[in-house]
Image 1 (tube, rainbow, N blue to C red):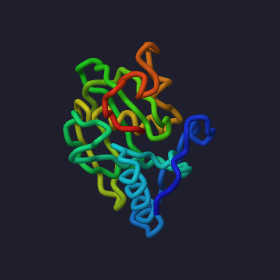
Image 2: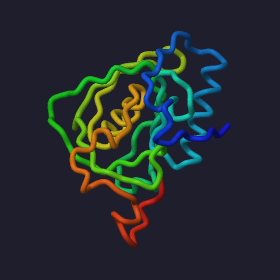
Image 3: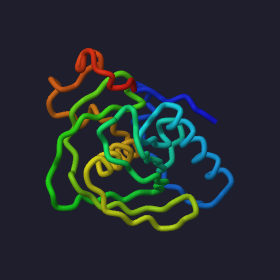
Image 4: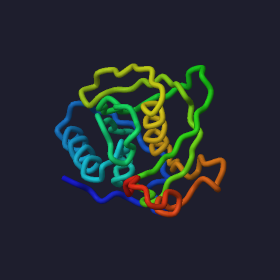
Amino acid sequence: MIHPILRMGDARLLRVAEPVTEFDTPELHALIADMYATMHHASGAGLAAPQIGVNLRIVVFGFDANARYPEAEPVPSTVLINPVVTPEPGGFEEGWEGCLSVPGMRGVVPRHARLHYLGFDQFGKVIDRVAHGFHARVVQHECDHLDGILYPMRIADFSRFGFIDALFPGQDIGED
């Protein structure tokens, strides 16, 4: 089932999400299927449960190619529950981000260039990975949603934040 995506201004996006305590349940599998359906319907790179009004620490992400981010390298399709994200040495990288909860806008956000993430899939199996580049950016962006943080809150230079059509006139960047 495709769910409506909450938009910036909805107080539910500012909550700290609750941990998942039961894995491999019909309800959890249904929620994850709905999250993937919603993400794909919106051409998203990722989606956090709070974006559809579910206050749980669950994110899904991944794609082989994404029209909204045509130059991004593929990101493995992942269900990540109760994630712990730890920066790795490598400093920060700036990059353009958009968000399904902030439609039609983009901004340059500094993110850790490399990170380690640990969590569980929907069956309770441990996921333990190191990511860099766009993969690392997507993980940080989606996990921020679990702590009530939207990407505009991380923007350092608001001269590089605005509506897609104003920032990139005549370019087909893809709407958020």
